[in-house]
Length: 195
Image (cartoon, rainbow, N blue to C red; front, top):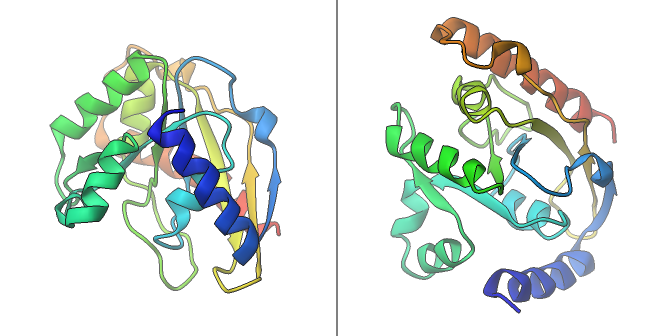
């Protein structure tokens, strides 16, 4: 077994003990080929909780500060995550994202770019639309609802893939990319709000 699969088995067992997790719509995730899974960001626990229930390996884009924490940085790199500089147009992270998708893998992103600690869902950054259009990959919205409290219920609802085919091979302005990204965020918001 790979490091990812071993970690997945161990972490899933722990999560199933401390939370009551309900999952819907796993069949909406393509069984193979590139795709982008996009989630609302409630907690630092989102990546492990979501990752252990998704059948395919997720390659997370994560803020670069996490990679500077000695043990955590080592672990998330081993799990396939890669860093992104927040607040700037990180060209290296975009290239890595496109490379992940070119290899037919699943890219995992939080379109808001940060956690929303007040349990609201914010606006999306334009990067999600940019990457999806350039890679010509479907976007699968995922809403996480409930509370990260001991023995509380969490819901993970996977929506139908969004294909942005009408925009393929077009160079769109940032305003249009933001508009498309926020349309994706609206799907995530709807999925997260139904518990």
